[in-house]
Amino acid sequence: PKLDLPVAASIFPREIYRAPKSWAEQKYSNLIYWKEHEKGGHFAAFQHPELFTDDLRAAFRTIRRT
Image (cartoon, rainbow, N blue to C red; front, side, top):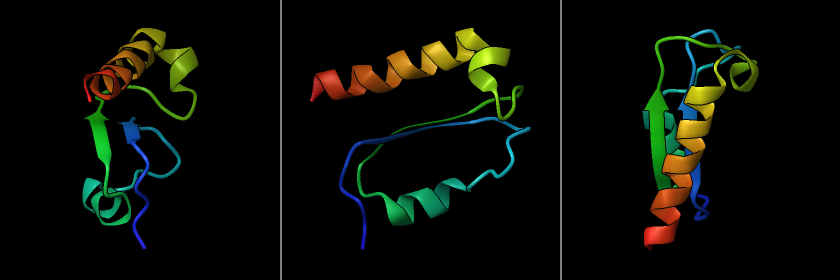
């Protein structure tokens, strides 16, 4: 079954596991935000807080519009 909650994903290249977008689209019917970054890893919020914060803001912006 698909999950119908709003889902946002920030994908960082040095993460332990990087799920493909196609997998996320199969599992989540309400994928509101997807961003693949060129730098960062498992501790992205610590390593690149500006990227992480930008993603949070962008994801919540899409929720506010609906």
